[in-house]
Amino acid sequence: MPPPTNPPKAVPVEEPEDVDGLLGPPEEEFWERYNRRLEFPLSTVAAVLFHVLVLLVLYLGGRYLLVDRDRGGVPVKLIDVGGMDDVGEGSQGSGGNVDPLAEGKPDKLKAANESLPTPEQLPEVMQDIRKILIDDANGNIPISPSNAGAYKMLDEDLRKKLLGSQKGSGPGTGKGFDGTTGAGPGGTGADSSRARSLRWVLRFKTSTGDDYVAQLAAMGAILLIPIPPDNKDCLYVGDLKSPRKHRPATDDDLKRMSNQIKFSDTRPDSVRGVCETVGAPSGVKSFWAFFPRGFEDELARKETGYRNRRAEDIDETIFRVIPRGGAYDIVVDDQTVKR
Image 1 (cartoon, helix red, strand yellow):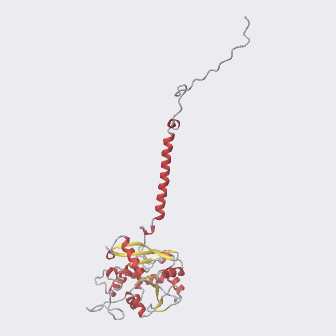
Image 2 (cartoon, rainbow, N blue to C red; image 1 turned 90 degrees about the vertical axis):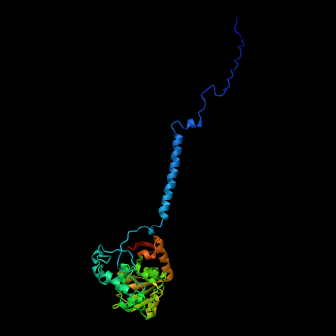
Image 3 (cartoon, rainbow, N blue to C red; image 1 turned 30 degrees about the vertical axis):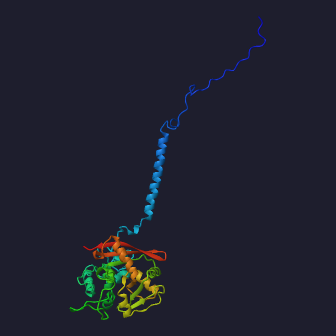
C-alpha cells in the first residue's frame, strides 16, 4: 500500500494553566528573601543604634560648648599683693607674698616684697585696720589678706581717709577724718561698701597698660594713685577715657570716694603700665580703682548667688573680669566661708 501523500498536520498541545502555583515552587515571601541570614533585623537595629549614637554625641558636644565653665571649681591660689590680681600666683608656704627667687626677678620685685606684710604681720595689720572702722564694733568684718597688704602700703592718714572713718578714743561716737560723725557707707555690717571692699578681691586679665585702663574705663572706674615717696598725696584720674587729664586729689574727693567700692593693685608690671598710660610719676607702688554703685550691686548679687550664701557667712569672695570686646563679664572665681 503506497504511503499517504498528505501527512496529517501536528496539532499544538496547549500548556495547562498554572493554578495556585501547583505546577512549580511558590515565590519566596519578602521576609524569607531578605532574612535568610537575619540581614533585615540586624541592619535595622544597626541603623537605629547609629542614629542614637550620633544624636548622643551632638547632645553631649552641645552641653560641653554651652556650659559656663568659668563658674566651675577652678583651682585658685591667693596672692597678697592687692585687691586686683591677675593670675593669683603666690609662692608656696609664704602666704601669697611675692617670691623673687621663684619669679626669677629679684631686683624687680624686691621693693614690692619689702612693702608687703609677711604672714606673721598680717594679724597686726588687720587689727590696725579694724581700729579705724566704726561699723565693726565686734571686730568681725572679714579682711582679705590681699586687701590688708594693700592698706599696709599706704600712709596712715590716707589709710584712714580711704576707710572713711575712725573710732573715737572715748565712749562717744566715732568720727570721720573731716570731723563729722562716722557712719558705715553703702549699707551696714557685711553689706556695707567698706566691708565688701575689705573681703572682695577683683582679678583682671591684662596685657598692657592701655588695655588695663580700657577695661577699667568700660567698668566706669576712677583712679587714685598715691604719689611717692611718702604716699600722702594722690593723683585723681576721674575720666579714664581721657586718662592724661588728671589733677591732685582733694579731701572732698577722698571723702566722696570712701563711700564707693574700691580695689587696689600693687603688681609692679601692672602699676607701671597704668602709670605710663595716665602719665603718673615714676616710682608709684600701687593704685586704687573706685567703682560706681551699680557695679557694686552687680558683684553683690553674684556673691550671694554663687552658692546661695548670706554675706554675713562669707569670709572672702574672688571675682574674675572677662573682657567681651568693648564690654566685660564678671564671674565668681572662688569663695571662702567663715569658720
